[in-house]
Image: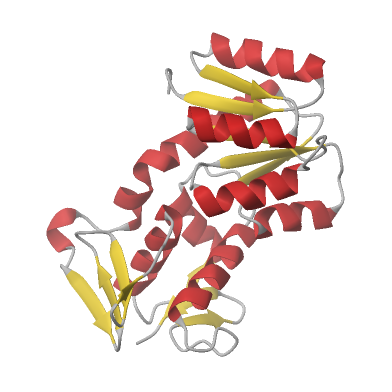
Length: 235
């Protein structure tokens, strides 16, 4: 993963300098920002491969920065916080963070998560789908069309704007229609076997997909919840 660029957004200078030093030692290019406004400016200018984002920031907090960036990019975001409240973790996942670490954390664990997240950026499409020779050109369910070759989903005459993980999750479930999968299994197949995130990540992505492909997201007909198991695709 050497040569990848990471943006570190942290207002604690000691921690910022330590992260920059250690990430550079691992071969990563490192850009930095010390407040939320600067974070947006640097992210847009540098287009990093991954963003480490503190929650407690001057000017704009990390939640707002994450919310804005998630509308503009699918770059993996790892959020940091000194808080331990469960609500912080839930909110971070709700607005699109890919992973979450509570301070203090070990450098070894941080590096492991970074490697896993970067690996998933490259591999999510391949691992979410069956082998090339078994992939149909497309699946059509009513007015929903999933084009596996072009990695494109259409509803009626409109092409949907899906992130790579949203497409990967929908594609995997559609290729196995009628079969229920647990959240842990979906994390393994779509996010990667060594993904260190929370299973709520799956719930959040399912909700986003329902908002895009269901007539009534509150009464889904395609992406169904299987109580005590997880999710399945019907159609």
